[in-house]
Length: 428
Image (tube, rainbow, N blue to C red; front, top):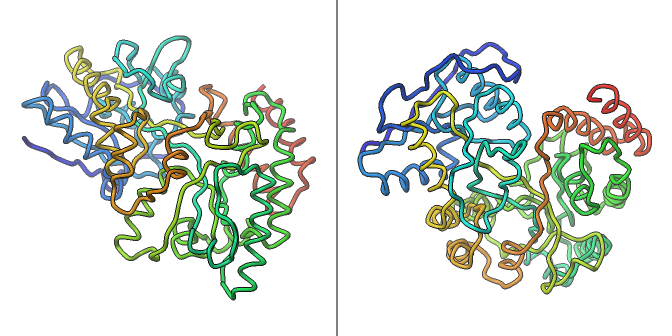
């Protein structure tokens, strides 16, 4: 069975805004009925695409899946350009949910409402517009709390037990700082990456708010807490993160911090980096992200967090015959067989079953404690990016708010007021 990877290197595409121009007909795979092209990015460090291609080929004799690699930074722009030129892949990976409406409004995605999905799979709502499904999920990352067990032990502080509210999180950070000072440990209690998600994602999910509402007062408490942590020396300051271009992989992997809120995708990275020696060798675990109040804490409750799915859509320009094959690929990628395979390389699939969870924790290097398994498998995950043509523009405005507040260039109230005015005036 032949496999080929098409590397699009140095694609000379003029800056193309995501204006959603529809395709001119045709796809990258042309008229070859047994060849399916699938878009992806960073193929050498993102093995899930080849894994799914191999699994689909194994179940479809004579079919070849070709991966089409795009630059991850300009992925949506480059894919849009290829679709407009009639040479887009048959299957279009939806890297960021917030751009789905752009593809959909541009007539670039096929209706895939007839693709059969397993019961209990997450993320389907993110790909539904006016009752029509334009993509299907295969992975669903959720934000959790990674912690360094060795650093907790050195500081003499109790490890997370699943009962933490944000107040407990702050108290633990204070205790860690004192413990590190007493033990002579050169580490900061918390590393929080510079993304707006690290504040705004939790705030929206845990206050039942939406970026589409245009009212952002729900962010106040969450930013007040982060500013306090920064000023107390419990957390690496935002300005240090951005000025020094710190990486979350390096800060946690090299034990510069004991706690780090992060998406569940980090498990695969940390396992690989510890195996290669790029990260230090230490014991770590996964806990539920701290909660707004005690009502959703404890292992008999369901913690609230956020995350967006990753999925596949079908190029609207494919032939009817190719559409059937592409939909078969979507169905396979969402299946339990594919979910177990993805879990086996540390990816969090959209479908979580007991068998999938077992496959995830069978990976050598993953933590083996019950709390880590609970944090991975149990949560109410709310979308950070609700499906709307306005989401991408609003998130850009809220990103400005995030930088202004955490850099200290603007106080919280005025930054929120400015963001609300801009959303009202620029988005409507």
